[in-house]
Length: 108
Image (cartoon, rainbow, N blue to C red):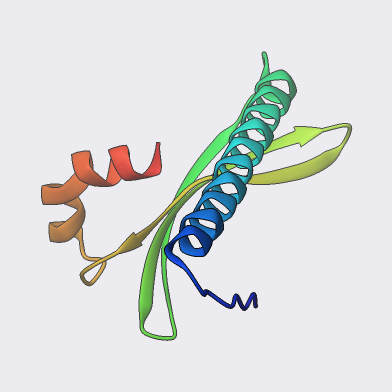
């Protein structure tokens, strides 16, 4: 937790600039890490048999839809989550049928 003492308008602008800079660098780091994992997974599954699994779960009154990729590398099963989205309604077939495009774009 960060605490700041703000005495002037200039202090507020300075703090905002610092926080914005942190946000941008974090966002860049997350993007770079995601690209690294995308390349890793792509190289691991190249010319291999894969299993794509879709699963919904509810925990502590929150529902999620996850898409997992399962494959074998060097005699070990690897399971990678490639998409996750929080659902706003009960996860029923009706909900999926009428919201599949929205869910797809949220995940990917």
